[in-house]
Length: 259
Image (cartoon, rainbow, N blue to C red; front, top):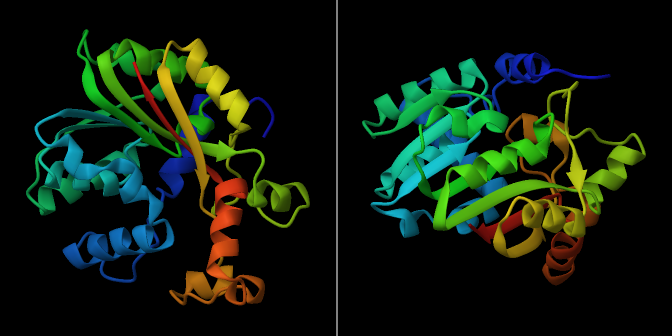
């Protein structure tokens, strides 16, 4: 899409909130949400490791781009004082319903990652978490500026953005893949490790650590039908080789930093 707007991005995610089809159970039930969570963490087991949920008990956590609330629920379960910011009103509505269903506390705000600091009147957070979100913004520098404005000395930043030097980007470049499961994502930027490091340094963050992870090994059509059938080349691949590929050519850049 040429010259996408923030409304284009919002419309895309309103039409299909992320992970919304990860369960065949009746929508909005506990069974549905439990299956959504289980599937997310089965396919992306690095997420809960990256989040360190139990570390944030009694701490203030802001998630920028909370989606339908899977990580948010786990931060709240672990005793965090949780706030979720989300551009998609449809996603936010589902997240609020989910928290209510599980009787967990959380605060939810409809808003843009690039203007996150405008919603909190000088408030700061102990953790600012954003997984797979700010590479969809019009200007990632504005999103990072907002994170910095919402930080105090010692705030931890945990962010995932897409990796340019990755197995998936190579397939996208050859026309064999697309960045999102839903066709037509208006913005999906990718970054090298050095580009990501430079962006975070420019925003004023310190102690920047970046690692790569996640290669999706399953056949897509089988996966859509809740069958976890690996492509033959991944099925026959030794686990040590697969881990080496994820470490060097994973789709996710996992970034830890401090303010």
